[in-house]
Amino acid sequence: MKHRILIFEAEGGSDKWFDGHRKDTIPIANALKIRGYDVDIFKFRDEWADDIYEYAKDRYDAYITRVNPGTIPTGEKVFFETLRRLSDAGIEGFSHPDVMQNLGAKDALVKLVGTGLVPEDTYAYYTVEEFKKTFPKSISYGERVLKQNRGSTGEGIWRVQVIDERPYKPGDTLPLDTKLKLTEAVDNHVEYKTLGEFMDFAEQYIVGDNGMLVDMRFMPRIKEGEIRILMVGETPIFVVHKKPADTEDAFSATLFSGAKYTYDDPEDWKELVDWFLGKLPEVMERLGGYDAPLIWTADFMLDWDENGNDKYVLGEINNSCVGFTSHLDRGIQDKVALRVIEVLENKFKKNL
Image 1 (cartoon, rainbow, N blue to C red):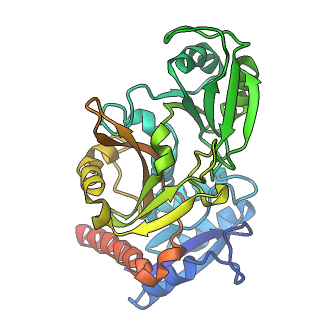
Image 2: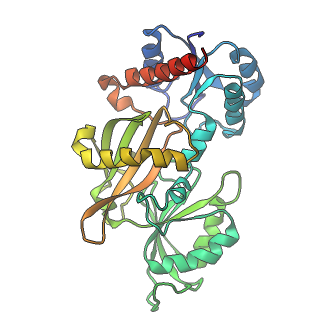
Image 3: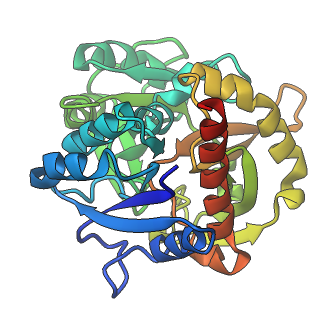
């Protein structure tokens, strides 16, 4: 083994500190260095892709990507292609781009229908035609949330409410002039459009690379907060209880939208954590059969079961570039380093 790790970052972006790095990048690098690994940090540019590949392919045991989605001005296509080339050359990826895409894509929720983690009436639209044919009926069953596959911090995630006074019943296909109230999660701002206007507007989320919309039932208990489990591999590290701002239309649980965060130990949410860990093998199998990502999160909302008891609903998985700067004092960077070393040592033993 070469005992060398390459960490990727992107230039610029609001996630950088005054030293030009994410606040959690250097702690990860230092945690690896004190355990005997050499660590280099590269800032990725498309025009450097071939040079990076040629330089890195025979020098490193693994790469760790700390590139926030959307930070690369030209998009992630060339970056992901480079990561795949490095993985094909035998370098361990944390995480491989296929893992990031399969777990991080919003339609992961649709793939998990039938596991008990998400409602059965959760759909994905991959074409404009499919969206415009199905959504006018879907919205007749009650409030929905539409989630675009791209974007972050709640951008392109819309709560959709029918405010039209004309009578209709579940299962009806609503007319295009049906009046809607729309709230975007990025900042909880409200807009009013007709159904037809909104579907025309939402086409932008479907067209283009990796475009899609996920259509999910609105969970009114989001007001009680979203519960995020932060994982390193298969180990829960902490739980964040994210409560939306206390305003009429707020449903977003992002800091940017005014949500309040409380950080708890996994034991404080033992029922949820144990339930999710029990589902984890099936989750990973349905989402491609990969090992769990290096640093990732699963976000849950409260709902009621048929007997009126609490149950949890999975709302999203994040794994492209999950940050943990608020918990560096708990040594999470050490847990990340140990996970990387564990995977590499197991790989080395298999190759003996």
